[in-house]
Image (cartoon, rainbow, N blue to C red):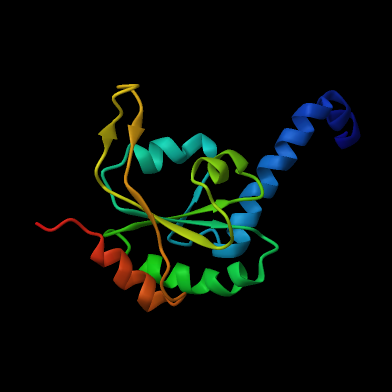
Length: 155
């Protein structure tokens, strides 16, 4: 029965499963499963953002933040408008505290631009860094999209 199955699972496994599920549901609650805004976590951030040759805008949000809830539909519209041109991601700051600390996030929502260019550090040739910049413009889809387009490399 279901009760026996739950008894067989250890408490840490149940907690981990619940934690993962809540993280995915929180980002999906903001953007929905078919959104063009990608869910970013500590586990996938390097592969998706840092190892990528794409321009990224990454929103750091908190699920309880009223400004974040108002901004989410605008951010999502910008992501859809620029699908295939600029990649958009979202980090749940309540869950991904390592990323919040690493990128010195002070308030929510914070949108950070990540350059398409990858650089290696002199101290650690295996470490990849990218130029970043905080977006400080209007919180409308049009303004976010215009900012993102201004960051594309010239050809």
